[in-house]
Image (cartoon, rainbow, N blue to C red):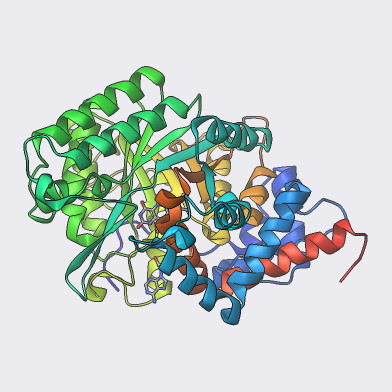
Length: 474
Ligand SMILES: Cc1cc2nc3c(=O)[nH]c(=O)nc-3n(C[C@H](O)[C@H](O)[C@H](O)COP(=O)(O)OP(=O)(O)OC[C@H]3O[C@@H](n4cnc5c(N)ncnc54)[C@H](O)[C@@H]3O)c2cc1C
């Protein structure tokens, strides 16, 4: 396995969790013991979903009835290949342009309503500003610290076909290379509108590839994007700073990623100067190169005196990116993710923070863990809390799951909330017209298909919660 910079602690499992003094954490622990699952070694989410302790309500008890029913329907479809297959084919057909009225989701009222009440509401925040803000308020009422909101446009580069696929983008390629590129302009306007919807505690998530071919060609060549894009980023950065909205720059296809990292580091140099991060880079733990990339960025943050915004994910492009760049096994990716998360929380990653003679000072880092993996997020939260309690140095950390997915993990984390307000948990959502969000919905459906184990567990947990509300035990 590729060299990992920091040493991960052995997975805590049930034994490791026993050290905590938090009553909430102990409650969840109790649930985990009841579930008889070795969470630490399996990296599955079953323990949360199997909550059956009579001493505490299960995490999914927080879901309103309507949301529970919708989640049950979507999870039932997602966990049954004979239902998901046709649904994926229909969604895929609808995302293709050039339909007549019958298959146009923005013009066919019946189709629009059907999709809106099911897939759209499950995964997206709203078609208008007011609808989106209502969803954001609802998230806060449920106990989330805030919402991460994104604008539904992106480009995926398929390594196998050597082609880029625009998602949610309609482009006139002839106009792309003109001085004033309409796609960059549309992306700029959409992103600024998104910032207007956000309030205290919310994050803006940006997919830079959504700005279209002129930007992506530059990224693919490892160059800076056109001046129009740099000016748009400057405007977005200043607006976010003024409104105290933090920015998570998404990690994307490897084909574009070097350019994205370069631009984001420049934004961090500019905006992360006041002891905390306004801008975060995304580090994909499944990449063999991530430890080296992170070491370079820690070095830059240390040398130049800015805060490194470290959003950590496992990585979403395994189906389209060059496979040899990615760890050989899921276990290697899990170990890489935990090593970076726990290393940051201990303020020791490779030479940074090490007490050896070759050790370097650990720079200012803000950590953000975007994951549905219960074992990883619980271990990270537990380590953070323990270090705070023991008066040991650590870094601020936030947690996020996608809107409509892994609610048992999100609400499970919320149940651990202590008097200091941690863990800070967020849901990540997308907004836009139905037609604009279809490609995003398709991606969520594909992700559910590929995470067979997790969707099956989620379905069982939701079913169990529904039976519990009906007064039945199963
Ligand atoms: C809020 C949020 C924001 C996100 N933002 C981004 C982003 O900006 N960029 C991005 O790329 N992804 C992003 N993701 C998706 C993320 O990268 C994962 O694809 C997804 O969350 C599933 O991983 P997991 O940590 O939830 O856990 P799990 O379900 O335990 O892990 C699944 C992941 O493990 C890895 N994996 C699976 N099989 C193998 C294998 N055989 N070999 C090696 N690795 C394997 C893959 O990365 C896969 O996605 C985001 C996820 C969330 C929740």
